[in-house]
Length: 314
Image 1: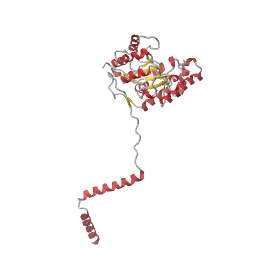
Image 2: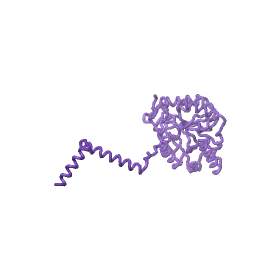
Image 3: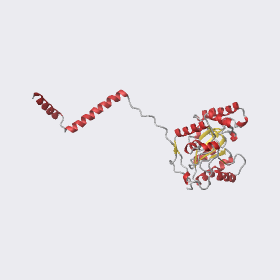
Image 4: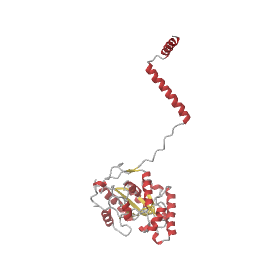
């Protein structure tokens, strides 16, 4: 009896102290308890740190008349995985698979007196490209530094002195590549992953050496023919016959190339093709093992890009 009276008195006192409905009181009490626990364990464990965010993917820059901006993107991790895979395979690459409306424009033998002109035309058109630089030409008077070229373009190793590696002893071959590699990486303040042999001269021993050095050897599937005297009309005729999805295009830092480059970019627009760097092409449209083994690239009708490739005239 005494215990029952005590319970009733306790409830009456609680009701006078908390003039609220019982459910509301329970909710507030639970919230206060949770707040206290959070504060306590937060002090013990320190401030929580968010995990580091992954680098954002590289969205392809706008290029009028081609695929809409943002439709194709590739992240640095995907590019790195693709390049590592190609290094393991150890065969030269000449093109992409041809399944995407992408083309890689490449310029050899710089830096030199026309590097800045090429960069200006490419910048106006938001067109990325890959430059294969010769080590002993770094610091050419008036040529932009690699750091000043910006992140849109890519740099590749084209040896130290542009010597034909086929004619050199293995030790001298290695020296040509490594000396240029050190100079380029120092100038770029970042790793260099791509290599192109001067004149395209290579053999299985060179392929193995390049692979052991962790580089991807890049040849080409299309050429402007500017490595010898050529007219603008002949240059454009050659590219019209060879350009297609997946092409890696060989050009040089020559006067005829600079003057014709706006027309080359217009040709890409007309065919619904987008310029990208070599590394982006290999990641977005990787060549098949059969292509790498045989060295063959896809051939199609240049003026009738397939719907599956995402091309077609704008």
